[in-house]
Each structure stands twice: as structure tokens, then as C-alpha cells.
Length: 195
Image (cartoon, rainbow, N blue to C red; front, side):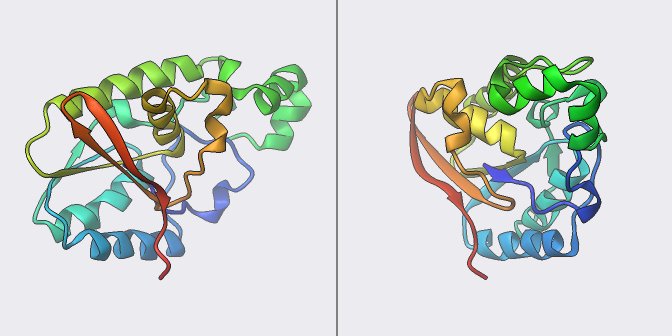
């Protein structure tokens, strides 16, 4: 699992999950670096969230292996509904109770017109499980979002939802999970290139 590379600076301090946001110049460097680092691996499939920031991260990785990126809708980030595109300050001012709950108990909030953490877990968990059972011998790279990686790790490691933010998932980080039959083995979490 790879979290997409760094997005454009314009979105700092804004809520975005379902919005299409491109990569920053640093993000473009990170995606190219990931492609170089993974070039020696036996990657047979590259799948991605439909969001531009994920696809733009996945394309160089797929190209390095002579593959096309397969879009998997279930790998998209949490939909924040009516909060999409708004600054955190705007949300705090206009919806103080919702903002307080979001900042103190984020996995208990259902976003107006959007999703809840439980919705994300069900959608992303189903998508990743379908991909796993459909996998061929060799590695599959799934480029997705921080929320998806955390929710999946939380599920397979049986981490309570309220503790999921204890799992660091930086931009352009790699989380490696192998499967022995139906048993997941987590080899690495949040591995970020030093270059």
C-alpha cells in the first residue's frame, strides 16, 4: 500500500478527501522516486484510487513495470461531504460542535453529505480484500490515501478505531503486507525514501 505523494500547497489547511488535487513539485519528485525504488520488485499490478493525486503517484510506478494503472473506486479517500474544500477555520467557526467531535473523536463523526469512518472501513476493506483474493503471484501496488491505509491496518492488526491515528502514514510512504493463506503479515509501515 502506498499513500499518494505530497499534494499541491493550495490545499494546506483545507479539508479534502473527494476533491481532485494534483501533486506539488515535491510530490512529483516523490512519485518518480517511488518508481525508481520499486523498479527492481516483481510488480504485476498497479491499482489506484480514482483521485488525481493517487493516479499521478501510480503512473510512474506502473510505467516502470510496463503496466497500466487500474482504477479501483473503493480505494478513494473519505468523503467529507459538505466540508470538502473548506478551511479548518471556516469549519470550526460555522460548525463548532461537529468540528470539536472531529478533532477529539474523528472515527465517530459522520460528515454531512459524506461518509463516516465506518463507511470508509467497509468500502476500502472490501476493495482491498477483493484485490487480495484476485491477486496473482507477485506484488501488487495499491496507491491510495492515508485514511484508507490506516483503516486497513487497523482492521488487520485489530487496532481499535480510536487508536488508528497512532499509525503514521506519511506522503509517498510504503506499507508492505504479505499474505500467508488468509493471514496477513505486516512487514513494514510508513517507509519513506531517504532521498
